[in-house]
Length: 369
Image (tube, rainbow, N blue to C red; front, side, top):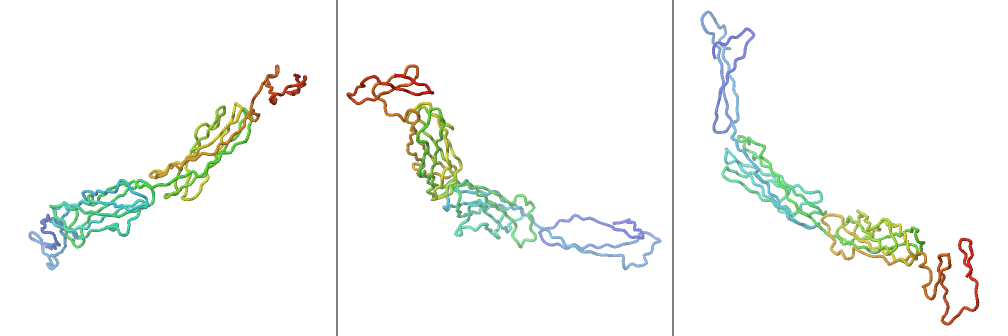
């Protein structure tokens, strides 16, 4: 470097060099500089400080682009609550190079749903690391893993496997130039199911013994529900069907449902009472009964014995209006202008002797026959 003007306060001079090193390693670079006054008529009074030197070290590394190409997870399509099943994974990794071979560590872990655990006897720990794997650039490497799993709740369980690759320790002169492809993930799903044997233990219908026509009365239905297990508590719906006789109407009409009743195992649970308002427009003996059905309201839980999940109450008779009169027979007549039917019952062979006087009182009026 020539022609550098140096003021009395001093100046810095810089020079740049393009260097290529091979193979990888630590390289020490030495640099020196000397000042020389050009031309005539200048004298340097101290030549001892006209030179200087420096040293620097550069670590030159080889590039090895490690990559996780894929993570494939397999879980059984169906599994059972409390049962054991295997979740497997295959992790494919590669050394894209150019440096080959290099040593790599592969770490893989299974992400579990909250109600699932890995059995201590599982073939692989969670997570697990394969260390110091020698990898060249001519081969893809597949690492298989198996975890034995147990889940306690019925659900679609998603199992996610995460895997990562990194250069093993002890290779200071090798670097991975692309960290973006050093990880991978995959997911497998298993539908974990179980059963709960629901039972309607009893159904009780309550209604009055008698009622007037065109006058509303209450009919209530109670039921005792049971869960024989094995799964519980189980979320259920109870459906109530009231048998309404001819000439009567019930409000609300049709089948009624009580949703989301939680049934623990082996404990009787009372269904919330259901009350219907009933009106009968015709007289007679009206027979009422109620049927209650309990059904599961939770996915992946089935009732193995559906026949005992339905029960019917005893029939209850409500005497409406004229239903309380004795059975009809013999002759009957209608009182003139009254709209009332008169029925006179006589023993066989009996006659009415003489004229009689029959007085009926209705709305403070008397009628003679």
